[in-house]
Length: 44
Image 1 (cartoon, rainbow, N blue to C red):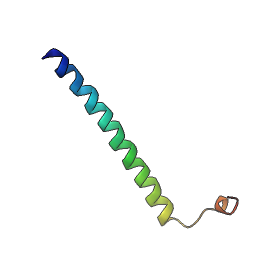
Image 2: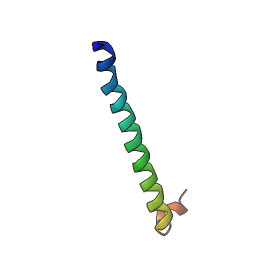
Image 3: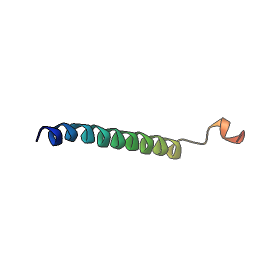
Image 4: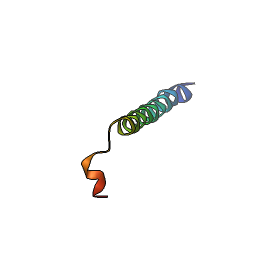
């Protein structure tokens, strides 16, 4: 029991990091899509 109980928080932390990273990326993409194109976009 102790082994499975110790593995649960680790998986939860990994899932939490993935969810937070996905939320940050979606917020960044939404900001870029809402804001007018920046000046450095012409350099690309």
